[in-house]
Length: 300
Length: 306
Image (tube, rainbow over all chains, first blue to last red; front, top):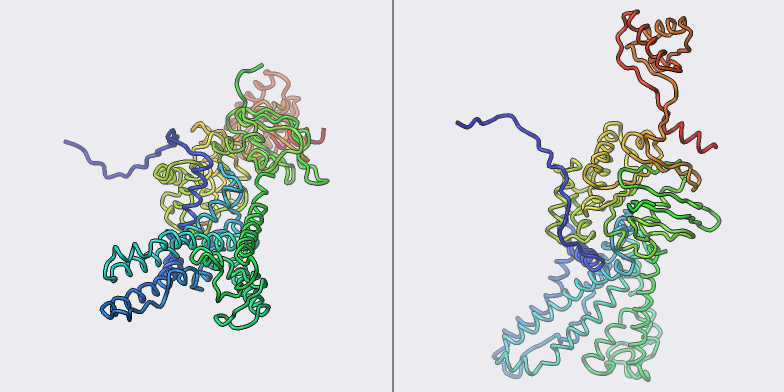
């Protein structure tokens, strides 16, 4: 008969070496990328950290749902279907996206510096460039997802409430590449600028306020210099390029319209489109230079 | 010339920050095992660690870890290295399990393996019960253990411990030293930087002493702890010790008490017999009789001054 002991026992399981597969820089970069996405979305963190991303997703999706709902209600009224938002308008019009970047970019960068995690990260097979790629890539992915998903909702919804989903899709085939390209241009711009500004501050609140401040101040300054009311303007000014807020929207217009929007403050400026692309690339390049300089110390 | 590749080979290493010289012409070879890097604050220990990790470039000279030149291939070196800094360095709003698993992935482990190993090493350092708690709520001792866990999760060949007992209470210090001592039995080499010579004396097989960026002395710990020609006798209490000192002095030998122990200068084995006989004749208990060794403190001060 078996004897059952009532006494507990503590087992020292010792140490088990790991002899499985082991990745290098790419694995480490991807691991940091995934950890940063989890942080941006508040995953494996308290419920408070999940509020901002999912409230944002709800806010940016509401216009698509409302638009599809109205299209459904008015589906039988031939010639009177109401569509209050276009795919082009839907790229980057929500200021909630800006607020989201101001909240999340500092959150995935500042604690690494403030809590002195960087030496631990760079004691791994990871370089400064890898770090920048992982952090910018994570914010880009979240921004792309949050900007692209509502467009998918809008497209699928419109197709389903149309008389023929196939005809709707064929009629709007351009949108299939225009939307992801323009959303990507917007997301990479916000991600690089947001992370670059956050890398210069150790406190999240300072980084977030600086990001919002840059977009607001540059936009107001451009508005004052260009003058006139938007929507009525016939001839714009190159001073409109000062607005960091509008730079990705000019590129969006180039993607959708092939030219600068006639109602934009850049309308009528010679080579306005090329100038917008150049300004966009310069800001992006400056942001990347700041980031690479900021994390260069690891190879000094 | 030995065919065994040393764990660490440092050739004429110099590191200058502007006009400040942190390390100067440091040359040393270190075997595998538990190695203590000792020196006062500002001696250059942390700079040496930064160079080993490839986070700082030498001004002159070179460093090889397991035969790999750190300056040429820092990624290869870091992929099998664990690092536990002296300062606070862990994200406070995440659980120990998440943090250690993430660092496992950053060391190149697949996701599942990283989570499994995180669980194992947290168990090893005694944080199995607390692994799902945020690190911000940990005590200093628990944070030190979590730091050690993240250094071990990638199964490193070499782990760099920068002042691992700093800020710990006596019990926490004992536990940390016991953990460090165990690492050697797991096949993990340890490079432990500290200014506490007693810590090194207790857990390290090999010692590298630096002062002002220069090498003071290096060698196996046992070889550095020379015999002093003084015998320590423990007969239980101060009163008995005083009586024994008087008796030995009457026999023509030099004896004195120190911290309740009797210290006798001996010149041959017959002197040891005379001490034993004196203890027996007086009916005193003999708890210990042995040669007093130099401490690493004495070695350090003697060599540093020289």
